Amino acid sequence: MGNTIFWPFAKPVEEAPLSTFDTFHFVAKSVLGVGTFFMPFAYVYAGSIGGILCTTLFTFLYIYGIHLMLQCMNEARDRNKSDDMTMSETVAFACDQGSKCCRPCSQIFGYLVDILLIIVHYSIGVMYLAFSAQNLKSIANAVWDNVDIRVFVAIVTICIIPLFLIRDVRYLSPLNITGNILIFIVIGYFISYRETINYLNKTTSVIFGKEIVNSDIHLYIGCVMFSLSSVGVMVTIESKMTKPEAYLGWWGTLNRAACFVFITNLIWGLYAYLRLGDMMYMPFLENSPMASLGELGKLCAAILVALTYPLNGFVAINIIFNQYIAKNRNLEHPVRVEIIVRVIFLLLTAIPALAFPSVFPAVQLVCAVALPLLNLIIPACTKLSLGYDSDKKWIWILLHILMIILGIGVLLCGLYSAYYDITILYLKKPMEKPFWDSAYDELLS
Image (cartoon, rainbow, N blue to C red; front, side, top):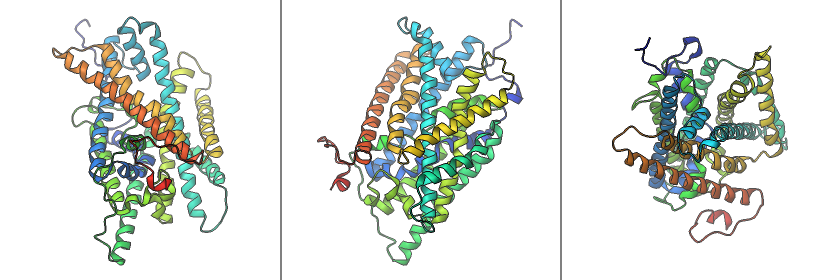
């Protein structure tokens, strides 16, 4: 027994139900959705070549942050001889192992990670309900005029209830695969629709997106927050795999799914920008490529986003129920309690969507703070606290300090972009533009 090597990936098969194929679709579906439909706006802010370069850079940066966090989690499991440590527990452990000034606050930092994850997935859940309701209302307007969008929010919420009550993560796989198929149906429908119009009008060579590089990178960053990664799902799903050792690595499941999402975002965003250009120079869906879709495309968009809700809520419920309610408690009826928690969470996401159907800027403001912290700053700080085994550790220290600085920059850009959108949409007045900002010129004129 003394010569036994600890293997942090070891776990009973019944506790790790997902195959590599299932995990690929989990990771892809966690990103492909509402954020994908906002990619054309990102290209407006960065330009065609600028959009390609920025999408490549930020995808690499965000996925590296996920890799770094997972490596820290595996290192913490190895040191603790434990096969199950969450992201929050890893951060708390790293703070306890790091600088003396951080040790008294180690548990606070752990709770902070859980709070940020819950808030992010709660906010995105609100946006999912509002997005699906908006598309259903657009379809219904052809038959019934002046129907309040809140009616459709209520309908979407009721329809999601049976899907969100699926407790076993393996049974979410059909929903994820269906959602991934639907998003390509929507994109294919839009491309065929535009090309048919261009062919009939004999405008096949017309390119509307003429900006090669734009200077509004800060607005680009705010627009792509939901489009490049989903830290909660990507970090949590590894523990549900039958072969978690296949998740990381140069061509592991995470990187393959990230490449799939990256290529989809790249092609879709560039194509829609080149075909529509500055026609969609507004930050909301009314003037986006979605407005060009027929009823079938809008219905598919509403369904695929609704199908993403159970996966998005899975992270929050996993934290609330498994880490706080059920942990160290002998619940008499755990299934019943979890179902109640799920229903309450869904209803709580429906309340803001019912009160404020145009929730995107508010959600963007929340995620502008949480996502850079979870994706960039916290993983880098965690690794700095755990230390390095490499002989050239000073290179990694400088790299991760630079990553923290970039994370702070992304956070500030996201806050500025959200504040800009909130000022225009909610306050109904343009804010005074700083001298470096050329965005929204057409809108403000």
